[in-house]
Amino acid sequence: MAGPVGGARGAWLEHLSPIWFVPVMGTTGLALAWRQAQPLLGEGALWVSAALGAFAALAFVVLALLTAWRQWRWPQSLRIEWMHPVRYVFLAAPSASLILLATLGLAIEPLHALPRGLWDALWCTGAVLQAVVTLGVLWRWQRLRAARWPGVTPGLLIPVVGNVLVPLAGEALGHGDWAWLQWCMGVALWPLVLWLLWLRLQRIGLWPARLRASVFVLIAPPSVIGLGLLLAGAPVGWSLALWGLALAFVVLALRQLPGCFEQAFGMPMWSLSFPLAAFATLSVRLAQTGVLPGWLAMLALALASMVVAALLRWTAWGLRRGDLLQPEPSPVGAPPPAAARALA
Image 1 (cartoon, helix red, strand yellow):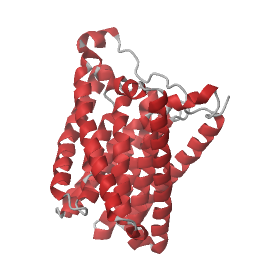
Image 2 (cartoon, rainbow, N blue to C red):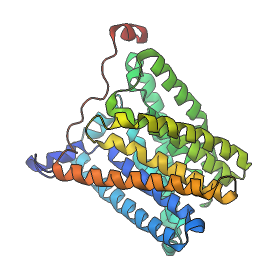
Image 3 (cartoon, helix red, strand yellow):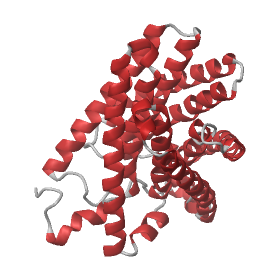
Image 4 (tube, rainbow, N blue to C red):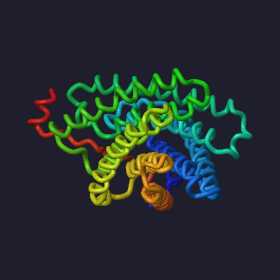
């Protein structure tokens, strides 16, 4: 099979969907987890965090340039992503990546030599785009009418996660009111999306095997909301309760993991990365407050690190073999006739 850069006139670029920004989220999230672990692991953790952050920033720039090239070559590509019944939620990944990169830039001391305005610009751009995409996703889902339920997957939580990320850098940048307002929007949407997922399971069953890994996204909202509560100075018990809920989702997701390997590796597998990194970050922060043992936080950090390392390796292999950047099989099957009548 030809490599990803093979094919006539770079046709591989047409298949560079926004889901490719999810690895940026996962790698940056892991960098933040290692940064938080510096008090427990020493100075080496800071340099691991900086290296991961540099890789994530480079990946974001390359992906942004390739996405702009794709849009120029195929002007309808963005509209096609937006009209897809599942992939449209991944349009929240680039803006969430910007917010995470700004957060990491403020957290790593060697990067403080860079202009603070750079992180402010990244954060503002990401936060505004995240709010716009979130409102657009809600509007798009409502417009799908009878076809909306097959598209209800844990991927709908990605806009929720993007909004609750906002205060992690917004408070330090002086945008506290804006940041916490957007955080409240994400917190309010979280139980709504969980309720929609429950309804989907009751009406048409589990999402297709291709999207099985997306169950890991359930881990991210309680983890990031817990971090936000710690930042806001709320009683640590609230964050500990959210950590317990996130742990329950970790156990649930890991039980689904064998089913994730029943199909060929694809970019949806990157759904494991950021949620586990966010859970590790919350675990480390709670260990620093003394409410969790340090070994448990290190176990979460090791799990997230091994997962991201494996995903990077599999992605490199997939690109070399040409298995990625190919037309995606439709992950949404037609509902059974009885379910279709019920959804109409």
